[in-house]
Length: 183
Image 1 (cartoon, helix red, strand yellow):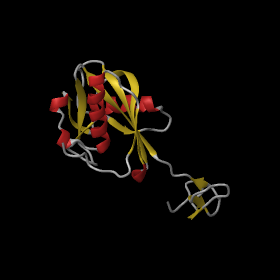
Image 2: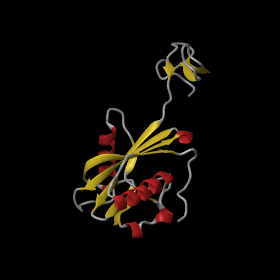
Image 3: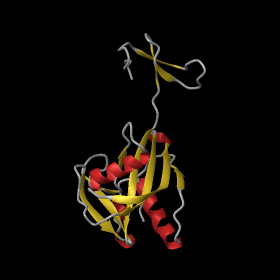
């Protein structure tokens, strides 16, 4: 950040009085610009013994499979963001949302919240940012072609939890971003 969005003056990095870390501060109006983590919200849609995946048509990781998810918009709840992203990326309707994985990704300043959800019907299709959508059983998941470690984690946890019949909230801290591990 080089210029203040409030008045256009230059920005300096300094620790504001009463704070404990450097912030972007306007040299003229003294507005403090807080840069905070971005929230990613999405769904793990389930239909019988299968899950709905989306093949990305945009970067990062175009051509790889993921769950329908994306950045939360201002003015919406995490649940609403997950529903919106599922509609946008898979033209799918889901219900019975339950927060399932909460992943902190400090190195990239993101928090990802994936909701376990029931797919309402089989009327789904690829959205503008999606090349394809498909239902996969555990054995059919394209494990080597998953876009992100967070998606790999959520799917592995889901199939493990399904065997036990309980789906607790999982808190995960990723210390460094990485591609999914090979099976």
